[in-house]
Length: 167
Image (cartoon, rainbow, N blue to C red; front, side, top):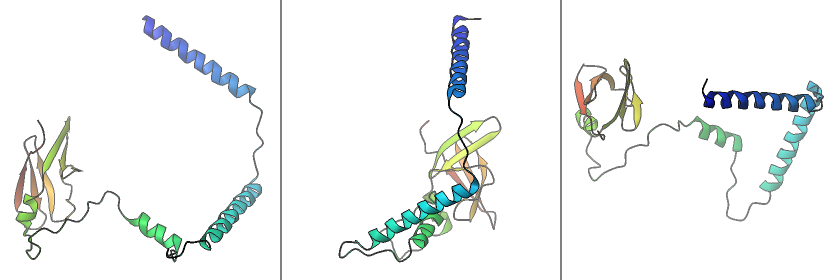
């Protein structure tokens, strides 16, 4: 056994003995029964509600109060934090993009391979073979180090995105 292994084993034993001594030396705690826990939680909830109601009456002039705090929180929590933001309008606002033009703006900028597992990063999102892109129109057909091939879900059209990341 090397000196490093001996030191690691000694530290592990020392930590185990120290935590065991602390556990045995601590006074036994008396668990609360469920009725006491429920009463304590209800008291805390009432205190919080009273505090919120008192704060609601002291809003500065010109500040709007939320109508329903719970509804606002639920609508905020329902949003997907990983959903990409909508594209910003450009100078060609009246022009409609065709599928080929929308795929031309996508960038294949990352690649990872671990054994048979391959992962492509397209516009900052990770995809495996078979994954559907957010637009629902294309899915990942082939991933290589140099390019990703996307296949249209309906129709079979293939689009190849060349690798644009750092080598």
